[in-house]
Amino acid sequence: MAKVKVEFACTACGTTSPKWVGKCPGCGEWNTFVEEVSAAQPRQRGGLPDFPASKPVPLAEVSDTAAVRTTCGIAEFDRVTGGGVVSAAADLLGGDPGIGKSTILLQAARGLARQGKPVLYVSGEESEAQVKLRASRLGVADGGIYLMSETSLERILSAAGELSPAVMVVDSIQTVFSSDLPGAPGSVGQVRECAARLVFFGKKAGISVFLVGHVTKEGAIAGPRVLEHIVDTVLYFEGEKGHPYRILKAVKNRFGSTNEIGVFEMRAEGLTEVADPSGMFLSERSGDTSGTLVFPAIEGTRPLLVEIQALVSHSFLPMPRRTALGVDFNRVILMCAILERKAGVGLHDQDVFVNVAGGIRIDEPAADLALCCALAGSFRDRVVPPGTAVFGEVGLGGEVRAVPMAEMRLNEAAKMGFSRVVLPASNAERLGAKFPVELQPVRHVKEALSRAGGK
Image (tube, rainbow, N blue to C red; front, side, top):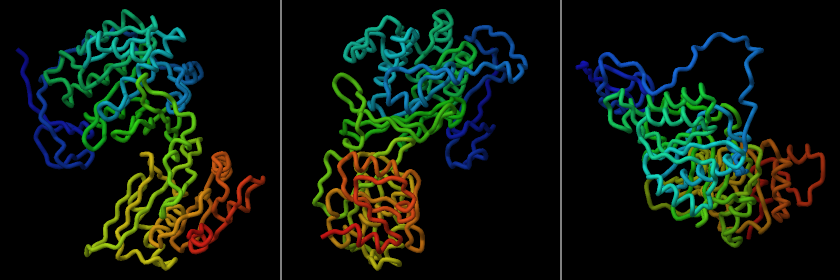
């Protein structure tokens, strides 16, 4: 009987230690070490087909497989992945329970199967009949999709080796276990080892692997952080509870940009693409409320019009509250200080709440001017005139600085029917063409507050 040893592993980065420690020496996180039982002499990895040993190859003779992509027929999904599914790539998809991870992958499998790409869909949480029931509801009845309800890694690899699919979906990685390891499914060792073997198998066999990952209460993918390092692409599926819209974004992509987002709407027949995200984000906007205005944002190569909302009210607390949803909290604090010092807007005794409607998150400095105008408008209880959009970066001196892609922002505002745009003066001077909107160039935040107007 093989001897066993007890060691501890960090759930954040996978660092191991012979004894429990409070602070991980690898990533610096506290209280992340959990106990693991492993064999003193691990057996040879089983379940993997015999591939020929790798040999050095001249760089000029290496085939560029990353340039060959297969579109799945879902434009929003293909946009986020960088133009389609890359052969032999490993993708990790995370999201809250019930957000639509299995749905979007099943719909993507339908598009791939229609292009002659066999797909093996492995479910560790549902039976074949349950997956078939969802497929029938989504209208997925293609012959190129093969279902398998299995949690044993060795059996999954054996079936994939016999079938030789072009794409394999594993839903989810936390349910898969290997008999070579004594840990329970979902443990740090099992998740790390099973994911590594699946990725290795996919790259050697030329199979694109999609792994579905559970998320923690904090929103991060459960399991060791090394899980995100060994895959090529990490996707997150997000959405507000009770809200039909879903946003797909990439936080890591070795074959494309991480700035693109995909917008979907959950319906009875599955997830449908939202062709006009700007109209969706502004569909429920009320134009007669103070503290709200529209900001032309840029997500990757796509312009989006989003509504920034601010609520400023007198505080009865010794330290006024500051709350930010959808924007950087420190950025909101910075804008409050600039308004206080450079524009004469006294927010030192006011509670400040900022929100970006629709559940989208804005990370670019171009939203500074819109934040300032929304905060000042709520403080003064002034409504920005309908049809006004605002963008620009604000410096510590109150100056308004230029931002990139001003033409795309103006074109999107004009397309959505906006008539006035407050923008940095330096951007207005560089425009090479006329736009069907009234431009209000500003150089200082005080000037922007007066140009934005309000009554």
